[in-house]
Length: 318
Image (tube, rainbow, N blue to C red):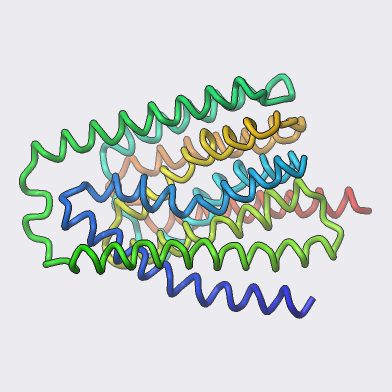
């Protein structure tokens, strides 16, 4: 157990360093190229930090471990909202943007309802997985085209911004930071899964807790660093973009590799919790900021959900 524990410690140290550089590079590219920070947060940061979820779920599908494939994707979404935004808002309250409330979160809610419909018969087929991937591409094209068009109509977006880093240096730190983020998260996940397996925990519970939290660590580090640097659009866009990516792209890719069997508890417990937290986030975003009290509420939801899973795992083991 010593080697997995050492992997967790080393992975965490690299994670914090790489998140800082990754956000610096992302924000600088947004300023230099005149791209809205929300797009950077949803596309580059959100999808980039979701790379561990994609890798884990596809590998789990190849290994016929449906529990880890779905548990990782849905568990990561629960973790992103309840743990990541909860902790981030407690440390640095997050300013919200109107388009998050009017467009992005409603799209996320619709995607969750669609995934629930697909999972209702107990299996997500290859055809349904291709539909998820196609819808993902369409949604992303819509968001990018709409935001860039709206951004070009406003000339004040970066009027008072300080001079950013040079573009080559920004790209270097973006790529280096992302590679280190994914590598450190993978190291952390390996250590955590090894310890969990040694303790006799089931694949579904590992997917929903250990793997979900582990693969969400890049989002946690990126959101906290982004909020600290005043890049609230990146902090919030990171989570929303990551959740869209997980539901449509991660599950879609895993389902294309191998149709995914859906256990009843995933449908009636995990998807319900994911939908509840997304609606709760929509309510919280109705104000100008996600404040510290709301952050505590989100974090409490995560602790309660994790405790419920842990109790269930203990009861099942007994």
